[in-house]
Length: 110
Image: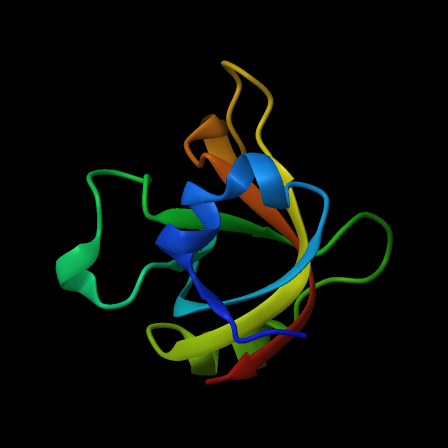
């Protein structure tokens, strides 16, 4: 796999990367109704959720290890998985606020 992308790079290339396996580096947010990776550095973030990607663990009995994610909340991480483009007009994540989602298979401290 190539060097990890920043969140902004992944979103700028979303049309080309949708459906691909990617690695993205940023700041983990693990809160109620907000499980996402945010662009780093903060000075380059866009307004609202436009520099953020919703993180999904898939369906079924598998999910995020909450204790690990709570420990990594606010820290720089690298996530790997399939980048998903949000449906037009619907958005991704809670209330459709995110422009994209990542079906996450690996989450580790950067």
